[in-house]
Amino acid sequence: MSNYKWKANLCCIATYKTLEGDNKLDQFEEEDLSFEDAKDKKMGELRYYPKTTNNPDVIELISYEVARKYLKLIVKEYSVTKEKSQMKSSEIIVLLASVFRNKEATIGDLAGKTDELIKFSDE
Image 1 (tube, rainbow, N blue to C red):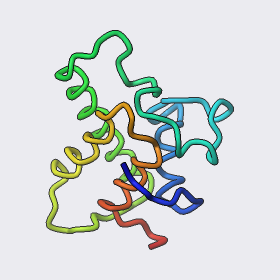
Image 2: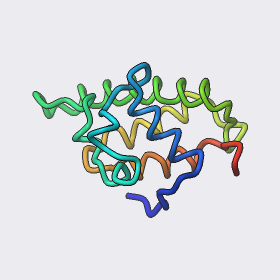
Image 3: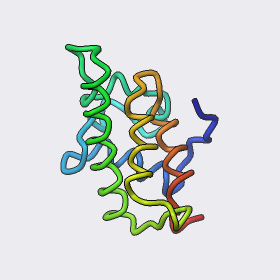
């Protein structure tokens, strides 16, 4: 999906910590998936992704909810701004959900999409 370079910048760290944190999205354990290896982990392997159905409507519904929570946590924890100020939060959620919905997309792809949509303080 993306050729985004996974590195120890605020976007990649925020993506990793938001997905990993017990009090955040809790999609994996840090001891099971290191920061260095996280970029290649597929969305379909994360806890939120349904294992009992391939129903696209169910997957889409879940992806919107996870994207909404993800964006809320990123904004709250990292005091970020939108890359394009005229873009609505609902539009950002739709774009993030497209990554969460794609079981072949990776955490690195999610970081790339996040960096495209969100401006972090280290940019």
